[in-house]
Amino acid sequence: MTTALDRYRLWAEHPYFDAATRQELSDIARNPGDIEERFGRTLAFGTAGLRGIIGAGTNRMNRYVVRQTTQGLADYIASFGGAVRARGVVIAHDSRRCSPEFALEAALTLCANGIVTYIWDTLRPTPLLSYAVRKLGAIAGIVITASHNPKEYNGYKVYWEDGGQVPPERADAIQAYIEGNADITAIHPMPEADARARGILRTVPGAVDQTYYDQVMALAVTAPDQRSACRILYTPLHGTGSVPVRHVLGRAGFPTSTVPGQEAPDPEFRTIANPNPEDPAVYALALEQAKAEAPDIIIATDADADRLGLLARDGSGEYRPLNGNEIGAILVDYLIASRPLPPNAAVVKSIATSNLIAPLCREHGVALFDTHTGFKFIGDIIREFDQTGSHHFLLGFEESYGYLGATFVRDKDAVMAALLVSDAVAFHKARGRTLHDALEQIWARYGCFQEGLHNVTLPGIEGQARISQLMESLRSTPPLDFAGIPVAFTDDYAAGVGVDHTQGSHYSLSLGRANVVHYRFADGGFVMVRPSGTEPKLKLYVSVRGNSLAEAQKRMRAVLDDALAQMRLSH
Image (cartoon, rainbow, N blue to C red; front, side, top):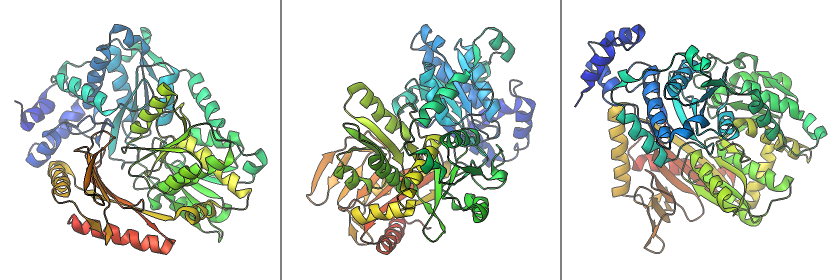
């Protein structure tokens, strides 16, 4: 059995690896801790694919890990028979360091396996990749992106023929094929010139982009004069959203300006720490610009344009953020109020997302479905709707700033969301309301919900062990209350069993197994804990209900503090 040191020596000495890789590893020759960190494990292919720091090593993102991963995907595709190769794989990439190179490595590795591969000449957003997979009838898709992570990271996400991210069982099967290719030096991508000459490496047809835009445009329902009365300020945060978001907003007639210093793609993300629209700091330049332009909303998208955040101007002219739960509630309310509801309309959200919309959906006869965290699970429910015809999909969203308003895409879509939130602004502005007014009206009807998210970063192999210990502790000695609010239901998704504390009974959980514990309050609030699927973090979610904003905020802070104290963690 090979050790970390064995793997290090292979990478540092074998001529298969390029000179830059061997030099990087030579520089750490006397650092056993770094060697162990880089080679003590392999970057795991999980349900969100790969994500890691760029660098040399089996536990880093680099061209060789991309090759090995792609070879595993190619072997998995081949297991469905030779004809599947001709259906092809579509590849997109974001604006990060090494993204174009990793995309080409993946493409040429697929070509070496006889698999037709479509690739764009320039960067594209993740939702467009999801659309292209279905539009071209491809068997799979790949996006090279680390989404909203810091600039040091990159990643590799795999989509299947339905346009959604691969579900856990496919991810496990692909991982098995990856592990079956232990000799990384045996993987040789096809030369690009040969792949193009053979017609096996192809450029994505321009009609794919155009038909995607056409379908996004059909989602806006407000009148042209209502749209032209709204001003939008947009920042793509140096990512892939600049061209598509500005295209759809301009075509829809929304007066839109951009933040010049953040408009161009930039792998260094020079004006921000992370390209994350959840981070208030990324709006600093936009807020300065807003002083002169006075837009109705400021919107931001992350590096691969699948997440959207916004600040909305309130009645006093101040710009205040709306979180992912609040944006989702506003969108559900707007979709119900602005157009005739289809029969059997349904909204889908994750269990980490606020229950604020539950009474709203009940009042209007809209079915509400819960899923595990991860948009692939929302995609699974869309596929069930397709197969059974049981429901008409209205909106899917997660608290982590991801939204989907139509099924021609099967992942969260910030381009689509930009048009929908702008249309919601136009809808409410025509009625004398801001988005904050709209949210307060929802609170007035159904109770004021407030949410908090705390990430505990625990990097490295030791961090993973600590995360496992914390999850085991929560299961062995589960909390019975948080800040004096009794836990009514405890759902342990690893065991697939829930406990009704009000009745002293147990029940089976209908969602699949996952490393999640979910403590639910009787009024719809909850505390949920799970390890991140993409980062070395333990994620703690809190949602509480109050009769007023002040009461809900106070309760949320108390619950969050108590949850951290019970877990022996600090802010």
